Image (cartoon, one colour):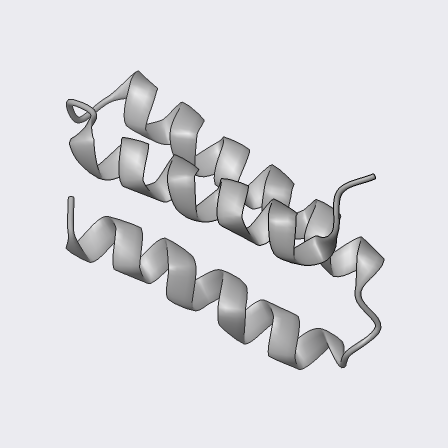
Length: 67
């Protein structure tokens, strides 16, 4: 069984792929997949939701800035 940390690593990989993808549908799909993995990680964790939201926003912002 995967851990929340494993899911976050997968989300980071998706963000890396999104940065390398041409703008458009592929980039959107990679970012959507990253959201999926982060959501799965947050369901396994018990910390406060606000901390999870901050981490999620930081990962997406980093992906957009480096695109």
